[in-house]
Amino acid sequence: NSPLKRQHWNFMGVRPGNFPTLRIAQLAAILSHAPNLLQAVLEDSRDFAGLKKLLQIPPSDYWLYHYSFGKASSRMASKGISSAALELLIINYVIPLWFAYGRYFQNPDWKERCFDLLQEINGENNYIIRQFNEAGWKAENAFDSQGMIGLFRNYCEPKKCLQCKIAQSLIRSENK
Image 1 (tube, rainbow, N blue to C red):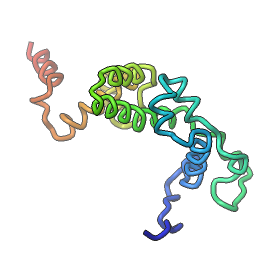
Image 2: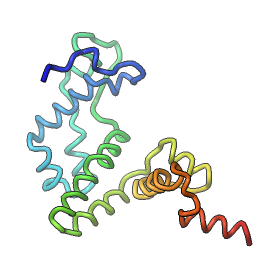
Image 3: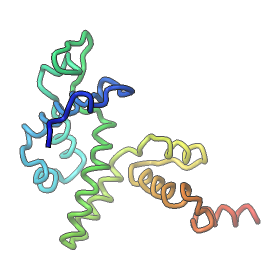
């Protein structure tokens, strides 16, 4: 394999705090703190506070005033992963990992930990969740927002409204 070339990195349309160079520096900081990240996520972090401590390691001081290599910035660049990015990382990395681990070892405790953790984290704020909010359904936590995303992907997007229990109950209530 050839090395990754600069033109393959996406900087256009990305806010500076999400530049690939900065994200790599953040990952390097996490890995230097926890060289065996998989083990740390599975064994050392049992709740949101533990995961936050593990994953919110700030990058080196160099990245405080750099968004990219060799180009200093007049504004402070990074103090680490934001709370919103941390929550997305837990939802999209930790939860699926814990769930798969529990399924592989046939241990339902891991699955329960996933559900408990999802209820500790704030609900996501994206296009799908905003549509549910406009319809009067508010995601109280990540457990709710993941359910809403699942409903949207499995029923709303493919237009399977008549197979959706929620749509069926809404149709029934309108006919009364």
